[in-house]
Length: 194
Image 1 (spheres, rainbow, N blue to C red):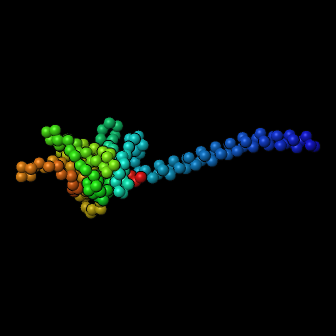
Image 2 (image 1 turned 90 degrees about the vertical axis):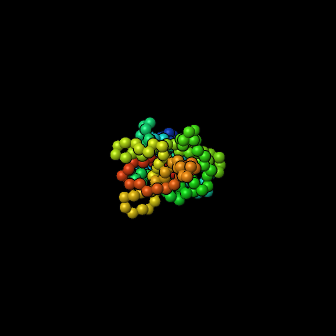
Image 3 (image 1 turned 135 degrees about the vertical axis):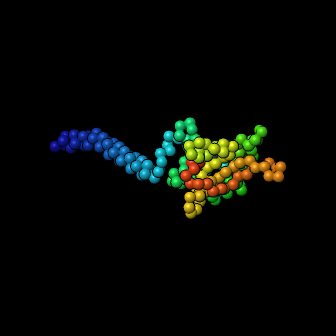
């Protein structure tokens, strides 16, 4: 009988490891699937292929800005405001922080080409000319545009516009929030919290 106990203990030692391995593998796989499903349901549009990168400019709010406009392959993605609103686009407050906290410089070899937003930590965010899509054509190609999130009634919605201004013979670059028809298609910049 003693031999049977030895055999049973030996069998248990060999098989308990396999049973535990299988149990842990199943728990891991189930957790992975549930986490993936939950995250997938949280993202209204599949942006994983776009490989959005963010830069930490050292802003007091901790907001991180995407380093580029959202893209469809190699092309800038232009969306109406209702589609953009379902994404994590910047709020008016986040834009105001960027304008007020950062230093701005412009590449104006001849005319405005790019805006450089330099954060308190020295990192740079570029805004280059995009234009907007109006009736299937890109118009105002000499301006920077992107939607922001701001509560407004009606079909006029808020977007950032960076453009050159000539006022009384003085040239300067304006960066302001303006209202545009929500059906126009503008580029999208994303933000996220640290």
